[in-house]
Structures are given as C-alpha cells and as structure tokens.
Image (cartoon, rainbow, N blue to C red):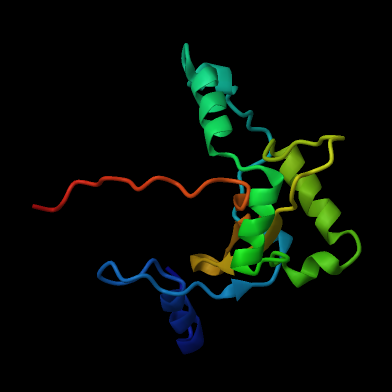
Length: 159
C-alpha cells in the first residue's frame, strides 16, 4: 500500500464504512468519469425471467399494483414532504457531460431508453469512496412518492 500524506489518510478515514458499526458521513464528490465505480463494458444482464421463477412475474406485478399510489396521492406526499426537486451533480450542467455518462450507463446495460414520458425524474450525484473513487447515488425521492409506505420488517433479535 502506498504511503499517504496526512490529509489523504484523514480523507480515507472519513469515507470509510465506520468504526465499531458507527457509520460515517460520506462527503459529496464531484463527477469525474474515470473515478466512478461501475462495471466494465461487455457484461450482459441476466434476464428477469431466469431469476424470478414460475410465478415471479405475477408476484412482482401484484406487488407493484398493491404498492403504487394514484397521481393525487403522490402529489399530496410531495406536498407533505416539501419535495419539489431532487439533487443532481452540478457537473451535469456542463454541455455533453450528462449525455456521455448516460451513454456509458446504457453501454453497461444499466439503463434503457423509452419514448414514454416519465412519471418522475431521477437524478444522479456522487459520494467519495476509499481509494479516490466515486459511488453513484440515485436521488429517487420524487419517484418514491408514488409508492405506499413500506410495511415494517420483523428482524430476529440478538437474544
């Protein structure tokens, strides 16, 4: 491992997973294409039909229909939450940056294109990771207002 300067070592600690199960804040990172942690071009996604089994598609469709809200309910959620827009990396305002990155995501089979108008927009920003890399974060808060509050999950206790 190469030796780090004092500021570099501090930055490594700041973006670590935490110490003794205590999370640390991940500082925002500014978009630099070669620093974004993504798969390599050439991989192929596994079709859902191979993953979800005999009744999987029906289960997903039933779940989707039971959890989505109508337009008026979604608008009310946005109003209650005070949501009007999502956060996006300011670098994407530079001409061509966003289009080039979306093209990269498309080439990696991480996004698809559609002529259908979107219900909501999802924006992208980045946080710093160890090793001077960037983790892509999708700001889905507006899209999430179209769904019901998830049911609680019963987890086993430590005892």
